[in-house]
Image (cartoon, rainbow, N blue to C red):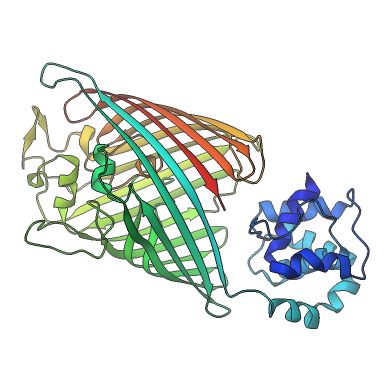
Length: 451
């Protein structure tokens, strides 16, 4: 298992045809399967110091040579901002493979010339959603079912040593956020460039420019997990600071859209700042603030724009997490929209600043989790979610699950890797709509074939 993990990591160094023929021609002997270096490299990978693509171009059941191990050590040595423990581990590895490292300069350069400048990954995905509404005094029982399929391609283009071009191209019947939110069947297929942006890395600083994915890290994606058109900067190592600004559209994927005659409030501007620690730490925390300049973006949640005394929405969010061990973890998050004018309007007899609408909170317990490159791996989770209509824009629990803004209740789910790169997920939500108390039950499942 250790040998397979490290073999996958070497794809970051040896790719294409070179990676399937190099070992046979390499003059250095293989590293024994019980060598301590495997554990050291696995730990560096878990800490994010060494990264592997897992794209299948390298034979995972093949022994690692000393030279290939040295290549990974060289990449780790070039990484900045690593912890003291990881640095000590890297120094120990460097001493072990000193002879091979002395020869790396010319030989690695020769290999990198063979690496293709554009890499493609993607998935085939099928998703089924069945959302049922129970009858109450004011609303009738209803149900909506949808079958969604998508072919997703994600090219990654190397520009220079600092900048990479990225895109996400989707073809299928689940492109419209409007249809997804209401769980309506879609009539036709769409081809959409869902993301297209440039990403720059300078030490511990990452810059995103264009139509890129923005997720609130402080609250684990509770109030925002959506692509925006703009710019984002994240800097720091153990403690990170993130800044972002751009335009967002929750009606569909046309993020660059502005006001039109038929849809006068299609897009809104937002700016945000977050401070949070490394997400791989045992104890995680984060705080953030988001400003939305066009309050009618919340109309998509079925609420009146009169809920705001001004033209802005100001949302503060916090999050905490704790990993009990390598499998069991607990996270909690809270968000509050402070811009609601309590005298502006009423809804169902409640004041507009009622915490039912202006607050979002979430508690989630996770056990393990499926890994695409590890057949048979699996995970389970249980959560209570309250996504206030006026505090959540587009949650990760909507983007990747059965709970919409305006829902509150319990969600249970799991994931399982059937065979390598075939991942199945399922979730069940039971609760009610915050606006009118109508009961909601949702069955959500998807199958992903990754490549």
